[in-house]
Image (tube, rainbow, N blue to C red; front, side):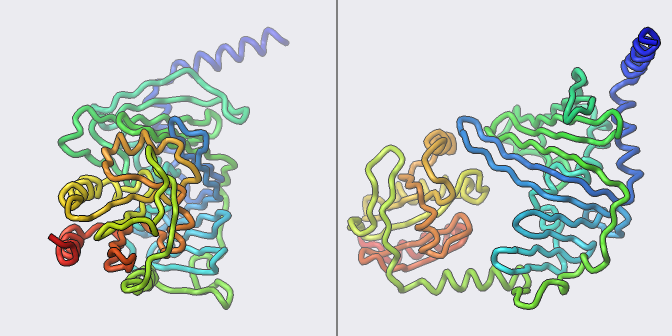
Length: 393
């Protein structure tokens, strides 16, 4: 009997080896394309080199592939500890349990529909991108040794993608000045279910790794029709459009112009703590930012230039990182991004006192610490105009 079992296992193993990587991946594509609906649990982790703390987001995800939607080809319903994220094929809306708020967009763009963390390396994204991997001859594919995840035997593949990265479910070309750029994509597929159970992505220039675990698949799952409407939320929830919400936030921020800036004293990377009350500069420019914020990275050359141009005329510029509780990894990050302005950290409470939750946000103060200018995002021409109009000399 034992000999028979061993013999059968050997036959099974030989059959697995006989399958080419293309055949295996095509079976997964076929399985994904055959799905009408699927529900699963996901765990998305953002891992940073040289940092002990990593960020993990968990949710229950549901996709309905029978949607007539032309943006992503599916409806979705994500449920996490923070709230719900829904795309019903036409409208997108997010609920926030803590703040009892629902924000909706009646005519969302593709990037808005794909903006959820749980859309990242989701089954819907894999369903879209995997056929592209197989057709593109420039993508180097390697099948590694089988692995075991959650007691399930799995195939493991690696893809090296030159000069492109995955964005909104598509391969997007990098800029011309990023020669040699490569994206690395690891895909682990359950042999039994033929469905992806793990994805890992990184690139050749960043120090961020994203891993996504997918489990507890249910291909018979359904959702009540009421799920697709934001009118189901309890009375007392604030329900308004994203456009109106951010308009209110912008107006609230701009209303601070003419007011005294809130006091702060914060530690500085590679320097002494900075107290706002002890700064005697003619003008003070504060930039609230956090690592890997795209707008913050794009603003670096302009803010460096502003500091260099106006520091002799009395302008002091400070960056305030407002998401971390310590300076771990910050010094390396600001050197890598070539940030020349002094960087303060532990700025979470300071950002709250200024009413800041978006990045980058800029505040320009005069010598008396009165707020002269506020901007969510960098409007370089406008900022320089205000500086020129208020600085002496």
